[in-house]
Image 1: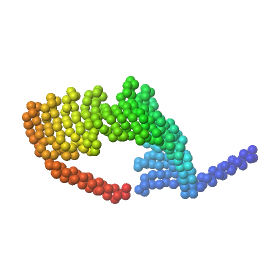
Image 2: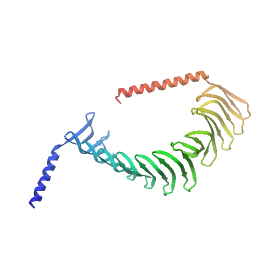
Image 3: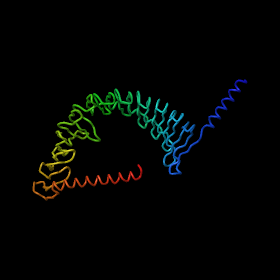
Image 4: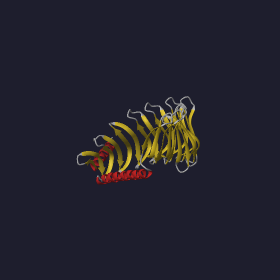
Length: 334
């Protein structure tokens, strides 16, 4: 009994000595707003530190040992935990979990020495699995899968050392393939591809990440919207179509901007409009016709030389505003 009493006195004495060594510290911004608070021991952060946003609401909590992050790490928003993880000797390690505002898990996985490792999972806000994939040394590796809420596979693709390789495909909710393509060993698209962008499909050929030849754009019902013929030097011939399949417009794109002759047609096939672009600037005389092919009216636009001057002015104005904003940023010390 005497031995236990001595040990208890020693522990109490040690704790009191430890607490005496700790000094509370608060850091304020602009003299009044609390930014950080915690304890220091021998001039180094020790124990739990709390960090506050501009509204002085708790945003982050970190644990320290001898000035180095070690222990739990928590991030908050409006009092709710958004991220929970741990540090060991200044490096993130162990299980890291990210949350939706409703408290459900958004994503979770392991970290070792600040790097993601092993299996990581992402979820729908309602709790169903959304995405599963593996990391090796913080780089995606192996098969990755995207899921519908009912658990059926939506998309699959492969990684090697953080680069896409091999087959990519997406299935609809009934299991029908709606997107497909392949990546080469450099991680670039190659061969025939079909993929969904927003509410339309695009289908064509890639050569080491570059589009070549004919590409077709259709809506989700298969109705042709556009065709694009890709040529070297970023030149593309573009045709748009009416729902009936009749040609609506024909023009060229250079560096993704309309350039050169422009023609627009009525659905019956007669010419509606003709003119010229200079890098998205209407130039010269534009003519407009009625459905019988009779000239209706003309509009004269700036010449190519004037268009060039307009482009240069726009570039100078953009640079002026950029420089002016940069000066403002510098003057504010950012």
